[in-house]
Amino acid sequence: MVDPLTIKIVLKTPFAPLLAQLTDRSGMMVSPKAATEAGDKFGLHPVCAGPYKFVERVPQDRIVGEKFADYWNKDNVHINRVVYLPISDDTVRLANLKSGGLDLIERALATDIKDIRADPKLKLATALGLGYMGIDINIGNGERAKNPLGKSAAVRQALDAAIDREAINQVVFNGEFVPGNQWVSSENSYYQRAFPVPKRDVAKAKALLKEAGITAPFDVDFMVPKGAEPQAVAEVVQAMAGEIGINMKIRVTEFATSLKQAEAGEYEAYLLAWSGRSDPDGNLYSFHKCKAPLNYPGSCNPDVDKLLGESRVPSDLAQRKAIYEKLTQLLLDDESIIYLYHPRVLIAHTVRLEGYRQLPDGLVRVVGLTLK
Image 1 (cartoon, rainbow, N blue to C red):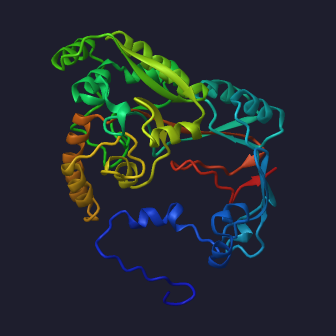
Image 2 (cartoon, rainbow, N blue to C red; image 1 turned 90 degrees about the vertical axis):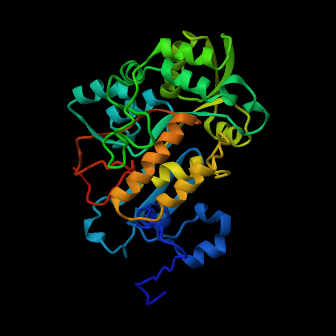
Image 3 (cartoon, one colour; image 1 turned 60 degrees about the horizontal axis):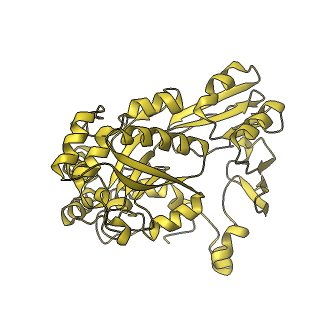
């Protein structure tokens, strides 16, 4: 620490994603004393430096915050108390918003957009998110990888070729989301346009299965987190894959449980969303580096590791993008993750809440907002 308001960070090597990481979770300021004293219980009584101070948390019921009198920008905080309520049922959440029981809801369903826009008491705020929805394929994470899909890149490419991403977008999301085949969307500066989103090609899919020496049909354990949208996506994928003889056996699983099972390799295919980070490294490194914490497929390629390391060095966009182009070729050939689409952040709120603007990271920011 240089002085009370200045921190000096010394790195062993150049690290291009640093600033992006510090603008995200890693850069959130908390009390060192409180964090040290509370240890892993810090989340129960957080002491931070934001616009609101923690009041209480009742598990599965509510989290309450009150305006922090010493916040640096306190004059721009116009709402004295914020209450977060976990309501998992999408219909109940929207009904409470319409009735005035809530002022804002996050993660509105794409199928409810028309209804929200038609209600004069409601407004919809949207932004294309930083993340993606994809299918993790277990290719090296324990015994469950020993199946046609896990053992052969050609079989994974066949499954990819059988999927119509735009059809998923239209059927499940009323065309509001963005089909994708990479870890960033086509609106991102790092998107590789040399590898566009492929069209569905059933003939190609069947030829790839034949090339791999696979006799269809065969079953795949398809773990899917519980929820209306992921289950609907899984059913569309199941129908498409079934046309080439890949029987995706949907196994609906509570989300936290599904993560534990994925980490333990207790799956063959796993429909999994990632919230995304502003720097592409945050959507790539932990998912594709050998033995990285979010590499549930168990993929491991020295060439991929080398390029991942190189991509973290230059800060120049063109230089990094050239490295990512090589990486894209390797990862799209391997298909340990089949990328499907990029969601839009959908926030619905009442008209009495004024000044709300949605950013791509999906966070709800209350500073600057007013309630009529």
